Amino acid sequence: MTQHKVIADDSLSAMDEISRILGKEAVILETKRVNGKIEIIGSNNIEDIASSNAKKINKQKSDFSHLFSNHNLKKDLQKRQFNKIIESKNMENEIGSEKLEEYNYNKLSKNFIDIETFSNFTNKIENLLKNMIVTDIYEFNNYNSKSLTIELLKKGFSKNIVSEFQEKIMNNEKIEDPELFFYHYLAKKLVLPFEDQVINSDVMFLNGPTGSGKTTLCAKISSYILDNLFSANEKEKLSILSFSPKSTVNSKLLNFGKLLNLKVSSVSSLDNLVKYIEENKLKTKLIVDISLENDELSGYLEYLEKITLNKKYLNLLAIPSSTNKNMIKSMMNLFKSSFPTIALTKLDESQISAEELSIFAELNCRIGILSGSRSIIGSLAFAKSEVLAQYMKDIT
Image (cartoon, rainbow, N blue to C red; front, top):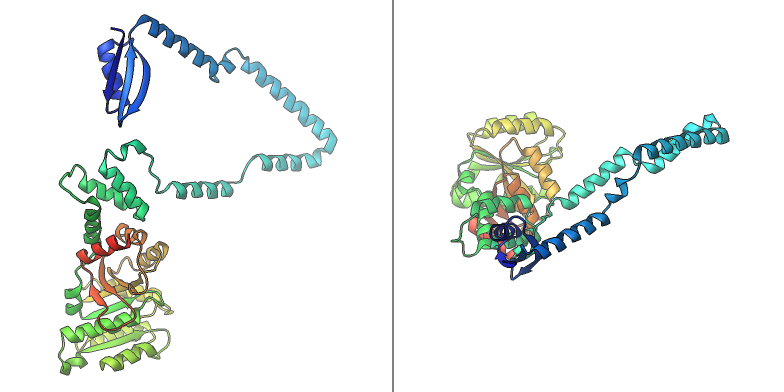
């Protein structure tokens, strides 16, 4: 036997087959990819082996190793050290010993970079490589899961979330539409059934950055509670409290209160907030609109962390759909110890992207409410996984 052709899924399997049939002395004459497979032609003919060995010798001569084979490195090193000493002496005589140190520093600065510059450079490289995947492009058509990975990353979903999903569906051949299955998987991970919690709570704190739509959300939730919990004669059982730096009530919140025929009060200090809640928690259901511009914010956060250990006290964090991932991280870090439920607001003004949804999932956030901002009526929806999955499918 002289030559033999093998077709296999990969190079390693093909070479193993060549070795098994032709022996360990066999040489590879040709390797190529045909229709996604690896095709290798091997030989154990003495002439082919001799020709292959000759090529290896020529290749070794053409690489860099022969440059050092017959070179006296020790002698060359001594010569360079001697020349360096001579150069230093000559330089000292020419410019004087006082300026030699400054010269050496300037020369060193030109040849080396400082640690801060190098650190900034490496950070930029890390950011560039963060979501990159190195793989064999020829394998995409052979494995649907790998193709799906690339498609989801291109849509903006993070590598961490996509990788986590891939582990869930690994070796599952029953899934007809893996992409749609991904949207449902992510939606179930994000959504928290929140309707019963709103109805059964005693006090609800509405937190969020300025302009996040808290005041409008406060009116929407109040309207929902009045429609589903209290009769027309029981409106006194629900009240709204504003906690802001100034004792005056937010004019927009006051107008909403008049429209809904609800009592609206305001406090400006943490002590007064705590006192008001203690005095009224058994009398009325309370919704508190919080301004994060309060001077006593740190004390309020500590109070919130303690009081939300009771399930009757809810922390609802309003985040606009246009919020970027860094702001989401910052807000979640601020409220991470007070069990926040997310209310995605302003969904009728802008869309939330795949990147931000990924950040919510990575931070283990739970979305309880979906809300618009242009109308008080008819734009509050409790989050459902089917609705969120369809929303993700539509925006991507």
